[in-house]
Amino acid sequence: MKKLKEMINLPIEIGDTIMTGKFKNKKTVVKSIEVDDEGEVTVNGKRILRVRIPRKITISEIKQIVHEELKKYEDASGKF
Image (cartoon, helix red, strand yellow):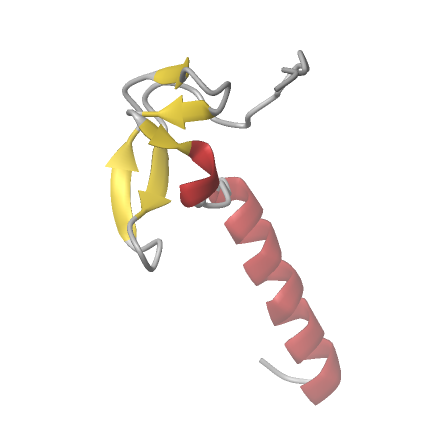
């Protein structure tokens, strides 16, 4: 079998939290990122294709979204 050498960019770093388990609902902290004998990327010894990476959002982004939604409501109803 011929192995391909490609650059794989993952949006995770050691210390990040990812979702694992059958239903991807168990939070797991990334302790190691490695490549196994078959060339698959592994996180904490498990293949990366079996995890979910939650979306990161900052407090300022949440405040901005809430402010925009309140403004839409205020404009639509004429009152707050």
